[in-house]
Each structure stands twice: as C-alpha cells, then as structure tokens.
Image (cartoon, rainbow, N blue to C red; front, top):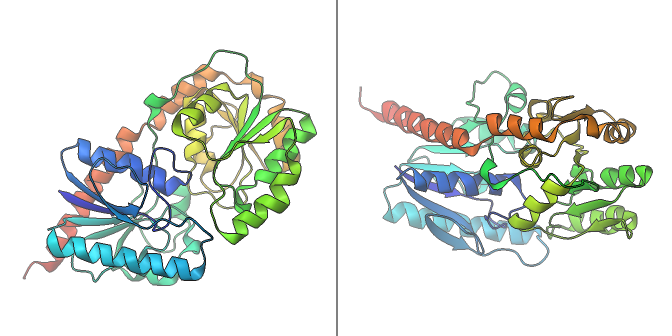
Length: 345
C-alpha cells in the first residue's frame, strides 16, 4: 500500500511532539514503513518521519486565523501535488481541521478523530471520509453511527521502572486551559510537595495568556516549569515521579501520557473524564477522582499501588504494535469498501 498521512498543518511531528495526534502519527507512520508499505507524510517543517516527508511551513509566531488559513491552503496544495504524481491507495488525516484541506473524494480517505466529537463541525459527518474513533467512550458519544475504534498505543519498550526514591509529582502535556495545569499545581501546593510541569506553550493567544495568568503565578522554587521535553527527558521524568496528575477539564478521548506513566511503573491520578476510566484502572494503576480535593486525597494513598503492576498492565494493554496492526487492517477495509462502491454493476 501507499499511504499518505496528513498532520495538523502548524505543529511538527516527532518523538518529542506534545500533542497526542502528532505522537500517534509519529508511531503509526513508522509502523507503516516497517511493515513494508510506502509512507508519505505531509507535516510542518521540523517533523521527523520514517518515510517520505513533504514539509509545509511551521508557525514560529502567534497562530492567528490568517496564519491558520494560509497553512491550510498550503497543506491542500501539497496534498494535490502528491496525488497528481503518486498513485496513493489511502489518505489518512490526523488534524482537527482536516476538512479545510480535504481534496475531492477521488480516493479512499480516513480521518482519525483525536478530539471530542463536538470540537468538529457537522460537515465532517457527510460520509465523504471514513471516520474512526480512538476509544469506546468517544465512539459512544456519536449518534446513530458505527465508526471503527482503534484505541491508541505507545512504544512501551521506551519506558522502564525506576526503583529509586520517588518524590515529585508530575504533569506533562500541552499547556492550555482545558488540561487543568493550574489544578495540578494547586494540589502540589496544598500537599506541600515538589512538582515538575513539562510541555509546550503553543503560540495560540489563549494558551499564552493562560500560562501567564493561571500557571506562572503558581510556580515557585518547589513547583517548576521546565518547558517542552524531549523524549529522553520525558522517559526520565516519568520513571522518577511519585505519580502523574491528569486534572483534565474536557472529555478526554484517550490519554497517551497516562499510558506512558504506567509503562514507567508510575501510577496516575486523573479526573474521571471521557476515556480516562478506560485507561486508568482505579485502585490498580491509579485513582480516578471527581474534584481537586479528591485528587489531593488520592495522592496521599499513591504508595498503596505497585509500580510493577502498573508496568505489567501497560505492557499488556497499550503496546503500539496492536494499534499499528489494527490501522493496517482498517486501511485495507476502507480501500476495499471504496473499490466495491465504484465497481460497475
């Protein structure tokens, strides 16, 4: 197969990407190439892929509506150039805004819905693109449809349990209001525990304002923001933490960082939102809570959980090899369904 994967236009795809969609595309694309298929990726400058990369400009300043529209036009032009010269078997979108650079339906197209369904416009549900979900919770929020579900996975081999003393709390991800970084910091201050915050502040005005007004005032000598983290740093931070906090304020469709923490032998304390109960096994690999107060209480009980059990459960449930195999099978089904629908009667 020849698979054309299309990323969100403004953020690069690499092992150190902060966004879940970019992380999944990074792993999946490598799996496509490793399975002997040809992989082509359209993604922002600075991306690192196993197959052929078609670069589009990345944003280095504030992402305004004008910048976004220009990036979408550039992405569509890049897609059309590839399709004019290469017999692509399937086009796989990963960006929230994929509908803005969707070419005419002349080939099989798949879009993975990495975010809550109500973040997408109704127009995407017109049937021109096969859609798939990343968790059962996300799929159950759809009305009167039966989209395939391919649950996310991680490269479990990159993570290992650290048996040394574990002290600090940890939060990792994109710094934005819906991820609740300020809640994690308030929990750390309430318990008087050290905490490390890691992840990018992308150049959206709302994100930068949130960091300046809601996050930075809660930082001090014991609660530290270290900026974006490369893969090696993330692995080390996860293995050394007492626990990972996920006080998400949105209906999460999955949680890669929770999977990564468990693969490191580190338990997770998370709000009971969206697919998080599918990822975190309450009382086994972490605790599910419903408030800031409950999160603080759960952190006090974290030593009850076994790092070895956390890692064992992650290896059993979250390895990316399962996800890659399921996507390759889905590709063939989408390609075959398209061929059947266009075959003369």
